[in-house]
Image (cartoon, rainbow, N blue to C red; front, side):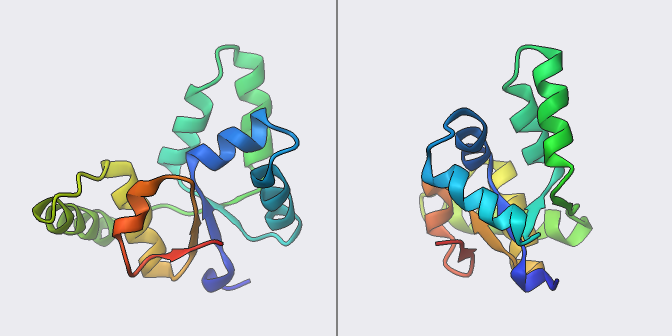
Length: 130
C-alpha cells in the first residue's frame, strides 16, 4: 500500500463508527479496514479514547484501532500546521490545531482525510475522502 491509498479517519467519523452501527460512516470505515487503508494519528487516537468513560470500553476500542496504520506527524508537519493556521486565520478561519496537524500530515504524505468536520473545507489542497 502506498500513502496515496491511505485514509486518515477523523474523530467524528470514528465516533459514528463505534456508536452508530447502521451509519454510512461505519460501512465506509469497515470497507477501508477491509482494504487495509485506514490511517490514524496520535491526537485522533487520544480524542477517540477520551470519549469512553469506562476503561474496559476504551481498552476494547484501542484494540480495534490497532488495525489502523499509525502515522506520526514530524517536525515539518507541525511547522506547516502553524503556517497554515496563520494563513487561514488571516482569512477568518479559526481551525483547531489538531485539524491543522492532520491536514499538514495528509498533504505531505498525499493521504485522504475522511471527516465530517467543516473546518477542513477551508483547506483546498487537502484530499477529502468522498
